[in-house]
Amino acid sequence: MKFQESKILQSLPTQFFATLVQKVNEKIATGADVINLGQGNPDQPTPDNIVKAMQTAVANPKNHKYSPFDGLPALKQAVADFYKREYDVDLNPDAEIAILGGSKTGLVEFPLAILNPGDTMLLPDPGYPDYLSGVQLAKVKLNLFPLEEANNFLPDYGTINSKVKEDAKLLYLNYPNNPTGAIATSDFFKETVNFAKENQIGIVHDFAYGALGYHNKPLSFLQTPGAKEVGIEIYTMSKTYNMAGWRLGFAIGNPDMIKAINLIQDHLFVSVFPAIQDAAIAALSESQTSVAKLNELYTDRREAFEGAAAKIGWYASPAKGSFYSWMPVPAGYTSESFANLLLDQAAVAVAPGIGFGKAGDKFVRIGLLTSPARLQEAVARIVKLHLFKNN
Image (cartoon, rainbow, N blue to C red; front, side, top):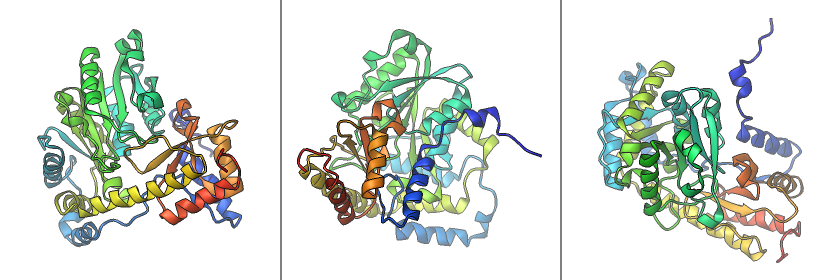
């Protein structure tokens, strides 16, 4: 017998990052020494205290059973304590926190939890490609709003026409931003709350890079008065604590939205392995020294790469968060043709901006996930292609 994929699976967008990895692996297979700057996978190990907490938790027989469907109460309390300590945000652990098997899970499943087929949601362009998976799975309509460099890669709500605002039920934001590295201001978040209330639009703020600020600590959306009335924030352990492979995150905020996401997860999952939740409690509750050191590491890498790039006439868009540099494509190239050239001729892999949306096609994303020396070597290889005015 032969089986075909369902129409729903066939409707899903091509997985951008899987395609990128395939291209890089094909180049490596030729024997090339590829400097891979196209990934978003943290390269540092998980801090020792978290690993030790996990080791202890794995050995505890109580963790070999199913977790409570909604996650461990102790973890939800740790999340509440973390947000109070870091952002002075008060959360009710029972009603305002949902435990997720990674933030991607929540971001993809949330349209299924709160929208009906045919409803409209708003997404940023450029934006995290996997947001589109939720659109297709929920069978909802999509409207994109551009993030322009002239507006510091923040949306201009005044450009969204009245019909779209009337139809829209849900809007996704992401600051610090992937792929641009932009951050949100308190004024922008206040504007967002007002926009949501005026138009009855729910807000989902993807705070994946919340701990990674370039000189300044990024703001949580929930620090904004009224934010919990209109939306939720989704946080991941992946970037803050180098726990990408552990698959743990959480959603916090509006009780109705949290109830909906818990309900859909009741049907899809039985929460997360309890030992991982115990390790997350240690991560959130114990010393945050590792987070400060990680920020210093990414700052050094950013300065090494962007400094070297500037010397050849390649200037980054000013980034204030995340671990990415958002670099312009030289004249005569698309982001994809430029990325292909760098991989083919310099063995440097970058992520073409078109993978994040049409508005990203003038840029490539650089992942600062290797040593300063390796980042500088990448620029030294690129300079030999004579693409920039200072070559």
